[in-house]
Image (cartoon, rainbow, N blue to C red):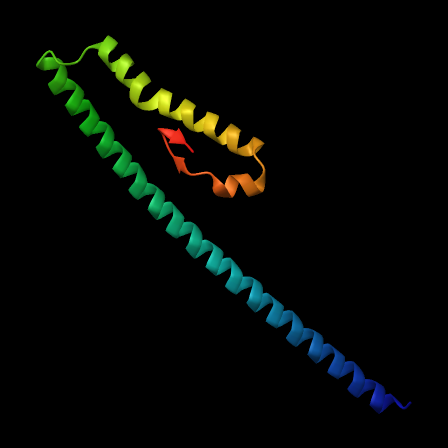
Length: 120
């Protein structure tokens, strides 16, 4: 092998590695830009959600104030309603899920779930 062929081979190897490095750098840069754009989008959505939550908290405060001024807000009634409307259905759903986990796959397909009332 002569020196000229070895030089051509070295230059070709250096050029191909440089091109490969450049393409890899472009790919990483593009991926980072996409990740950054996704992050900005998620941050924007999160700020919108925070504003929605703040608005809902303000409306809840207004509703409680109106109910309290009219004498319609009672802590005992709120506790009873919370038990009836939130905690009991949540407990029934958890019990139904435990029952479904214990049942065979074939039988599970035959069950008709009518949450929160019954399971047949």
